[in-house]
Image (cartoon, rainbow, N blue to C red):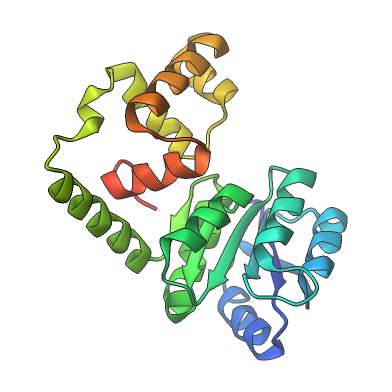
Length: 217
């Protein structure tokens, strides 16, 4: 079985050491490099082409979110997992918009890193359980405050299928292949579901799907 290649990026040597400690015993993971700042992470990503990068949001020279955007632009196949102390939906949205596939709170790194690496390597998003709970709680509170029925039920069966595939990280082309329809059909359904749910980009689709329990990161 092919190993999952991983690059670590953090400006604190003790954090990198801790991540090494978590990753090295995993038989299906190969640690291929370490970066001490965001700029170095971008350069090493281009050179090493790891399957997964674990990076701190707060890094010198280039922060983790900006580094993620540059890394994903270079190679969209790389799955970036960002580590953060911020228990905040705005940071999560920024991370997803930049192209991150995973978002871990530092308090749960020890429990979540192995699962996150394997999930992201397969193209699936992964968030710390506390983040998922927060999103679900916020969503339920919003529905209660607005006294509205669930807008999800406005979607057609096909739109619901495409919503889940998009939230799982599939491209329009991959959705079309999976559902045996044209790419234009997928794009039309995507536009309609985003209009119905008042979503504006892929990051918001992922957040919505997590809040609704459509995907289980």
